Amino acid sequence: MPATRDQVLSSVWRDGIFKDKVLFCTGGAGTICSVQVRAFVILGGNACILGRNVEKTERMAKDIASSRPGSKVLGLGAVDVRDAEALAKAAERCAKELGSIDFAIAGAAGNFLAPISQLSANAFKTVMDIDALGSYNTAKATLPYLVESAKKHRNTGKAQPTGTGGRIIFVSATFHYTGKPLQAHVAAAKAAVDQIAHSISLEFGPLGVTSNVITPGPIAGTEGMERLSKQDDATLKRSKASVPLGRWGEVKEIADATIYLFSEAGSYVNGHALVADGGQWRVGGADMGGFQYPDFLLGGEIVSGVAKGAKKTKL
Ligand code: COA
Image 1 (tube, rainbow, N blue to C red):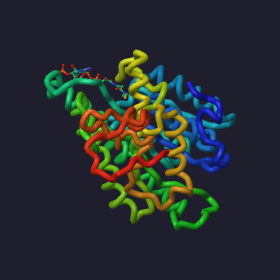
Image 2 (image 1 turned 180 degrees about the vertical axis):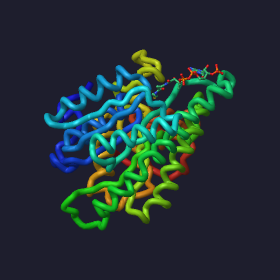
Image 3 (image 1 turned 30 degrees about the horizontal axis):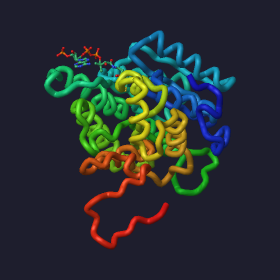
């Protein structure tokens, strides 16, 4: 588990920017969300993380709290994001024990690989419920507090002495940008998540709240990459080569994107999907006519059929 400051955050962020602010995060014990929360806590905030597994959630809360002496991190287990009432109660408890909810991350998600031919209606519904309904429930539970926070820490575009507040981030994906086999359920759910985020940006922007999406690409060391991808050397090599930047991302790079959107630097960003994937989703159509991306570019292969006179530029 990344724990030192440089494993969790870039050095560009200033300590104390979230002093006494509170982050509410569903799926907060997961590999990506726990690092988003840890980064926030390192920068001065307190947090409440939620999950279904009691032991895992409480253990992670303690571990995150150890990142900054004096921080408070509540770990509320046995909370299923499909249960709107349980989330509302958890938000109430968070605000009561930590003083407010200034930021929220809707991060709980469910995923497995399955073709439509092996995907039951209940399997499809399960992922829709966890991702789409769960994100909606997270927003409904936290928005009253986020509006309060936005009133206190006004988003004027000028530096505010009390810092920022009233911001929500939804963790999504890019599967639905291009279409993806074995992910019909997740692509449908994440498309819904994005639209929930964007509706909030329209309806709550006038109240000072910002609502954005972060879409992590393939991130090293995450449950998603370990469980949803074959782990043999050839597959891993091919997977990394398929990212324009030639590597998987680091959890820290998702934490940096999060801090950007929560900080003063992200004050005018609302209704945006911030893709942090090394450019991977754009490669969806990059294997063309037998020219395999990026091998034909790196190997200097001449693309046949190009019009006469279109000379190859020396690189
Ligand atoms: N392939 C096809 N169908 C599957 C499946 C798979 N790998 N895994 C579960 N299902 C189906 C089940 O068979 C069931 O459908 P059925 O009633 O028609 O048989 C349905 O999905 C619900 O499964 P269940 O195990 O009852 O759901 P759950 O609520 O306990 O768990 C999951 C939800 C399935 C998303 C589970 O993978 C999970 O809890 N994931 C959380 C962690 C996670 O995925 N994080 C994301 C990391 S990227």
